[in-house]
Amino acid sequence: MSGRGLSPFGTILVLLFLALFIVGIFLFFGLMLRLLYFIGPVLLLVAVVLDYKAVMGYLGTLGRRIKQRPVEGILVLGLNLLAYPLVAVFLLGQILIRRRLSTYEREMRRGEEGELADYEELESRPIPPGKQLSDRDSGNFVE
Image (cartoon, rainbow, N blue to C red; front, side):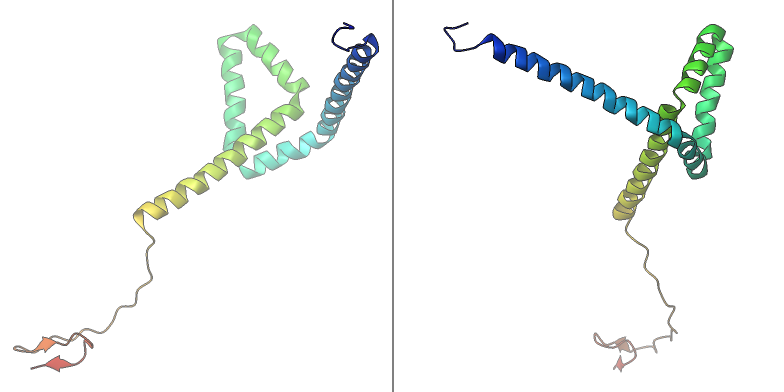
C-alpha cells in the first residue's frame, strides 16, 4: 500500500463515511415512512375522490387473489394493510399518471383531427341566372 501512497487511515475514513451514509439513508427512509403513515389516509381519500374506479379495481384484484389462492391472498392483504401508505402513494401515482396520459391523448387526437371552429350561418340568396359571383364580395353580382 505504501507504494501507491494510500494509508490505512484513509481506508478507515472512507469506510466510516460509507457506514454513516448508509445509516443516514435508513434514517431518512424511516422518517419518510413514519410521515407517510400520518399522511396515508389523506392520500387514500384523495385517490378515491379523483378516481374511485382505480381504487375499486385494486381492491377487486385483491379480492380475486384471495378467492383464487386464499393463503397467498391473505398474506398479500396483510402486507397491503401494513404498508398502506405505500399503497396509497402507488394508487395516487397511478391515477395521476392515467389522468396525464388521457390529457396528452386528447391533445394528440385534437391535433390530428383539427379543432372544430365556431361558425355562424349566413343568409343565403340564390344567384340570378346568367350572373356570377365576384371574387371580392359575395354580395355583388357580375354580369
